[in-house]
Amino acid sequence: MTFEKGVSLLWPDDVTQPAANHNEGYSMADLTLENIIRRLSLDTRYERYVRTVLNSPSHDVRVLEYRQAVIEDLLRSAGLTAGMEKVLHSIVTLERYLNEPQWQESELRKVAWRLSELENYVECIDLLNALFEEAGDNVRSTALCRLRAMVQSIAQDELFSALRTELPHLLAQVRGIKSISIGVNLDGQLRPIEATLLTVNTERFRGDSSSLLSRIFGQNPVREDNEGIGPLHRAKYDNSGLFSAR
Image (cartoon, rainbow, N blue to C red; front, side, top):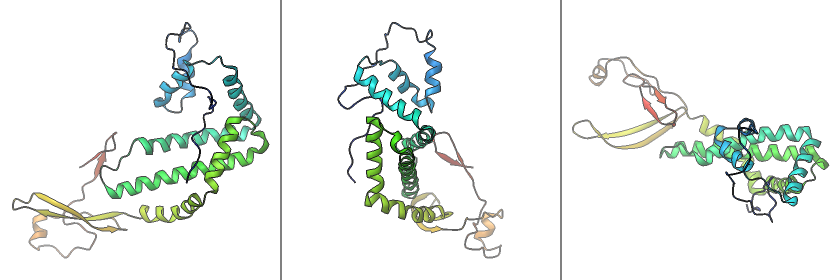
């Protein structure tokens, strides 16, 4: 799929965005800009960007008219405005998939992560496309008309349509995975030296409170396929997405 570059709702293509001027004569406190920044930011991570925009005021008539046209479109269509807010939350989530991969060198985790990323992308495109169709002639600004054309082009692309069709089946398969079996080779001191993935399963494993030694020396009944020979250790995730057994 080949599409045009992204569309800015703030800056026309033929205008160079100025560098932020952090030495403006007005006071951030006097204008209560910090409160405005917090209100405009969907996430605290975006406060710096919003602050940069507010510290980069433009006096170019073309820029002001460009932005006013976008605002007029949104005022004409309450449904588009409300829907855009929902889309923005999805875009924030999608950006996290792009910037904060958390598969920790696991190919299986990478597949699940990428499929969830694609699911979010498809939902964003479909929602935007539906919003623009509903808005109809209320969309007149150059910025939103270009954005609508780009979204429609993506939504009508054959590869995107194929992705939309195949994705639910792939997600169902991946999300149906409940456990995996791993084979670990040990040295003479029973230290792990090699490991490989053996099976991917649709059932969870169960732990056993019996003594590991009693299992090894055959003092307990034969276990089921999904029953361990020791207690089940649970993972505890920290804020970075890493986990440790406990």
